[in-house]
Length: 484
Image (tube, rainbow, N blue to C red; front, top):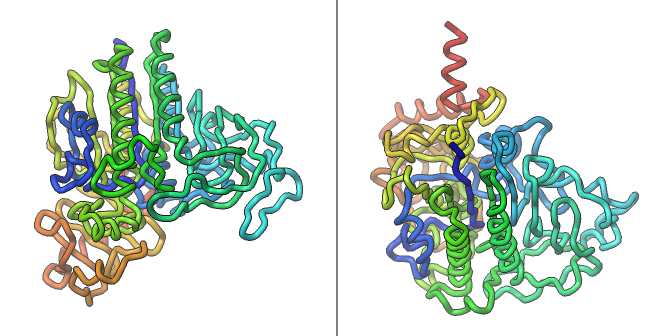
């Protein structure tokens, strides 16, 4: 029997409270995502591995927590984060007969040094000059080196080179220094300096990526193989540049309009699957790489719209708002429509779950932190995971077990936070922060002094999980059996 097609739609900096199906108070219409949730499973306690993008993408594609290897994002012209031999989701599926494509934001590094001209160095404040690279050469160690047969995208929307990359080559050589066009309607362009293709428009990126994704789906009609499409969006990440037809479509400003465009992209993909006859035989997974950027605070005051919803914190933070994200899964005939699950889920779990879907036995040196969530998807179990580590940067950590959440320091802040947002919460005079999320999802009050035994247990759990090289139950069981 042919296994199902798999489509992963990955938004960028989308908040837990931005979607109508997650927040009744959202000022942003999201009919397509609301429909997807109504046709599948809506997970309310799902988490990215990190509060920033590169680490979350790494964990999603490998089933291994980013903090075992690194914490930071890949910066402009940075190398690949994958070590030799690291099994990725795309490689696993390709080994099991899948066509594989990544269309969109990669942000996991390439071997740019292989095409950089000898002696070329970035100029302070200006980045690399356009002639610093031989753009005719293939760029190694990108998506094609890690399981994808095809790639199309701009790598990172606010990093150079500002041009399209198809497979391993740039489509048009970047010949001019970067000048952001159009200027974003909200927030900063956040564009790193460097080479750009003449005429490059930031608001044309998502429309072109969408067209390419739809075209690739349509091309699969002539193939007898199942397919895996990883479609990481560049929206609603800064620069906030919704296409003109989405202007004014929300009550949450330009960012809200960009979320409307994000929802429209999801709708276009769903319609393509339907028109090509794939809808009933395709798993569609939607999530976001982390919580919303700090512009969310101004949005709260200006538009009365909370992108993190009731959660505390935003992108980069170890508070829930930094890493608790929407996660919706539709699989007709397997997942009952309209279900909601409160099970603890990590995006890192997708690797083991999809391995189970296709009947693949993962090797012990792969997906070390991935829990198989298929029994939750099927409705056979309420949950399969009881604990998870929360982390963005090396200085701040959190650990969850059941409803208890411990931050290993007094707070979970990293991102810039206005004073009025700080003042909404009581000051914490203790060395750690403990809360029961079933009673305090907004993480308002530290209760560590009242529960020293819980603090000690969670501190030990965090130390154990960080020290040992895995947390996946199949590996823990194997380790226990080996000691007997």
